Length: 111
Length: 115
Image 1 (cartoon, rainbow over the protein chains, first blue to last red):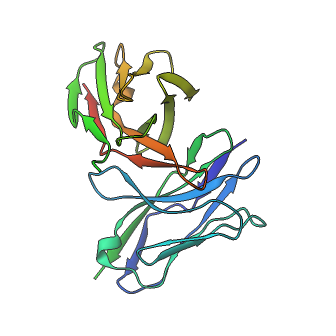
Image 2 (cartoon, rainbow over the protein chains, first blue to last red):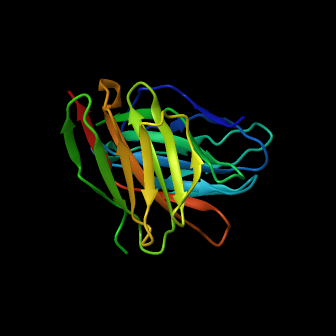
């Protein structure tokens, strides 16, 4: 079947710290992978995506690399800011055009 | 381009009532998906409509239904509301991009509270 597993939160970091949020997936075929971010009181926003193995998605200082051998798509940022505080969702789209989301990881960045 | 819009943003209903939520996709997007988001279950897929046809369906009871109009606008209906239906309902529209990937763009959601 298809599923996404991401590290449980909440995660609390100091400003300028390094961020990693782990995400692994199970899928048939070759899925596309996504990271979405949800700020308080808002819907989900696409943060970055990768459509094939070894692709690296990047946006706003965040990066994630599609690793087929480890079925992972970990989110990283070198130096987080208070404004990055949000809930982050890893997701996959399978070849049947169905989306599967992880349970979300809450990040709080303190000054 | 305007983003995905959802109406209403907030709704309070009582058990047993029914409710209809509306979603207007980004112009040109023909696929609309609905999700239920709760603290305990996370984001759960309800259904997807494409060109007025239901293309995919999640594991929700028949009380949850939807439809899509010729202008791609979509509505979701929940009948005989239960307390457990209290959630944020998110709509997402998508367009197959040049890479052949359907990237979903989400609306702000409708917060439904069932009393």
